[in-house]
Length: 215
View 1: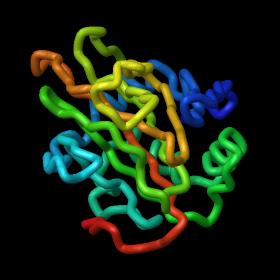
View 2: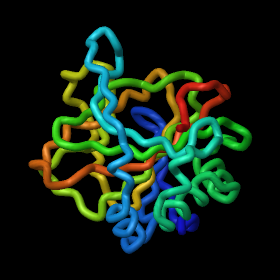
View 3: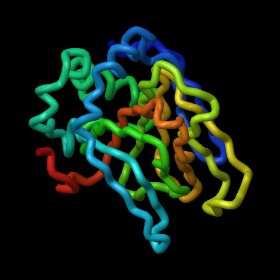
View 4: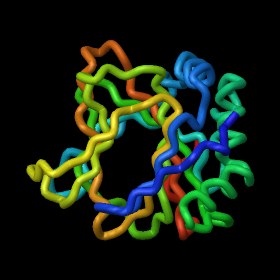
């Protein structure tokens, strides 16, 4: 399913990013979007200004600490195939080679994230015990005026307008390790409630701990 011969673009400033376009074909992206388990996602939010990271979004875990959730086995075939690929050795080999980070043997979480109108993620850096985050974009199309862009910031100041923005593109994969400069965010979604922003996010951790329940 995953096109692991896809070229990977590497960016070093303001922090390290790895970007692959077209990791999935348009037909596969359309099938995944049409059958996405959006009804299984649960709203999560943090709006306390005392925290560096604030957010509002929806999440359904497919895998936590290398263990698949019980509900993941009930997904449509195209989603089970995607999970097989993302949790498989060949993808780990490809992502390790593409990023220069050995991800073999690390704890892996895989989640379905959706953003609807008003959802966002504030500027933050990610936790230091994470090896890398990889985001796979699954919208067949995305209006330019709908927000939901991945924002690459040059500082943690939300008012700093020195920002690069990447809109959701079908089959796009974006990966980056956390550093003291990896400031990033997701701009507020405003699609008129006509379209849901859909991604699958992979997180590789150095420590195997019980962060969440997979039930």
